Image 1 (cartoon, one colour):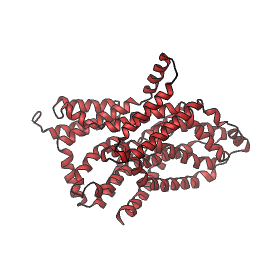
Image 2 (tube, one colour):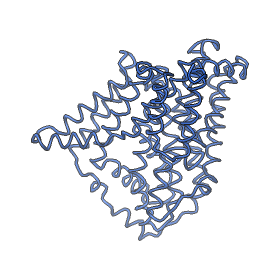
Image 3 (cartoon, rainbow, N blue to C red):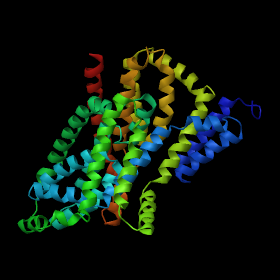
Image 4 (cartoon, rainbow, N blue to C red):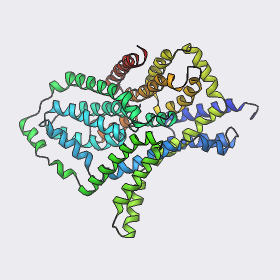
Length: 438
């Protein structure tokens, strides 16, 4: 007992207050969860050793490794090359560009991360639409939706998948096998709808198209040797994710090894001072705010686990779904989508993971409950399309668009985001039913 209250009550109050401050955006999100977890330790809800035990260091290592590799690869200009080459592939036809940039964004988001992808693709998109003298709004929406849908397909595509994969022991190929077909179906549906509403009405003059076609995509590549080194390491790391599942090598180990190899290649042959400067610059590419946010969040949620709060909630959830895996899967799918549209999906998923774990034994074990885990992944990732604040990529695109004089306001986005999210979740419901419950 602490101040006459049980540890479970104290842990719950700290978590609720932390989430309230988190969603109010009054403080930096990393600061909020670090304060919350520190208060838990200071009040004796968690010991220091327990807090460290609650941190999933495989997930942290995976995030750091991928951030370093993508950050170094970015310096080669590869992503800008992909955007310009895609536009020229369809002869600078606006209708074709809308579709092809959606595909490129989805693919890059599956193998890199959403935020990096849109940071690099969106400015090029705005420049292309400016030359074609057409509004960028449909293209920006397409890229937001495609990034959130495409990121669902793989372990490394979206933070919720990294969390789920680390907690459940799912590998790179597990996500590809289970979710890639659903992602392709949803992406095709998205492209068809956008073509009907926007693509068919888009026109550009022959002179404007010629201006785009005159852009030399190879001018975007600022460092060819770095491009080939980065591509080689990235392919090797993704291959390592696949092979590592059979040799029981953690994804975080492979990602950090890949980052170390690329750092060695990136700095090879340089003078001591220049080499050290490049390494420091590479480490600065890591989003340390996100890393510490995950670290504090793991400890914060673990406080609910060790005090028995999640076990109690798990029993209540079992009563709600009446022991049915089908009911649990569809409840998690729709609840995670709706809630992820309203709040940050990362803390939601971090809280749901240990909760679902407490339900596994009563529902028949890990294998039997796999549809519920896939439902959590799909719902939290697709839910990112529900509102402008639902995913980091959305906020990033809105910020870039505003600086370029093409503001995306909350309501304007909601008119498209909510229908896209609901449609994709409806498709996902049918997909889950056919794959797991027929």
